[in-house]
Length: 383
Image (cartoon, rainbow, N blue to C red; front, side, top):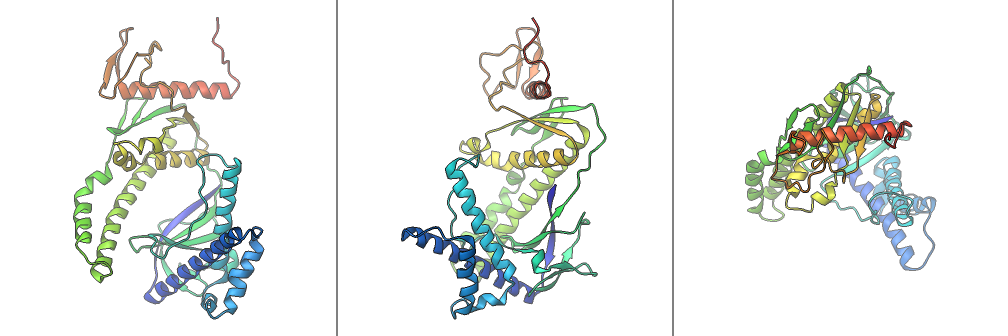
């Protein structure tokens, strides 16, 4: 399994200038390649192949006075920028033809120097290395200080240098990791994700929703108000923009850390984890959009997915239309309706249910049934 390991970078002022130059060159090559293909399509010419595009926007462009400065950065950075463009086109064509599942992919767009996130990628051909002193050595940039929070499990195949909106630099290594199956356990859990509680488990436990964005709203509001009072193009505005970005980065970091810790705990304690396949995009179009985005359900489920695969656990997603809240977990009867303001209800069989705990129990039962069917169990009930 391939995983990404991210570490904080601390480049010196000269190295920051070199990185800014590399970001700009990669962006220019990407945009030149996109423009060449768009012009060819507008003129009715054949699609420009990957090899021909590389020859035009890199090899030949370096020999011109307008693009001679492309030689100041590593050629691998430029080639990887074109590789990103080629991948974007392949995904777009696969989406048009129906070969790619999921939401439709839009055609590639031009990159702007004002984008909040800038990134360049180095492969092994660039001969990047980690020095004996623990520094990251990149061609035509130099040795940069890295904050190693953990060891790399193997030699990295690529490293991506990222600058985020808050002005922080990160090194993202792609490494090959082996599966590490945990000892088997008989425990299984169903998870009902929500907004009042982030997660309610089938064993009755309720995980509070941290609401990181809501808690930081006052600080964010003050930073955004200060930004709105600055003049466009001024140095004060640049500082205010970074201040707002840092506030948002703190929220995102806290949310990511919470999701990592909770997902690791659930995977470690349970042999099977069952979640509901929520329509997050649909919920994000409602009046609950801010709270839905603040919860970060998709990020949490994605972490459960790869951790389950790595540690030998089973993750099951049940259909979003499964009536988990309206079904009695004791007798299986369905309630006629279940408005959101109903948090407790009593079934005709006499069972009194907490809405969320009952839903989590039903989610676990549906996951067990799906797991048995997938393993060849009996689908039709006995007479």
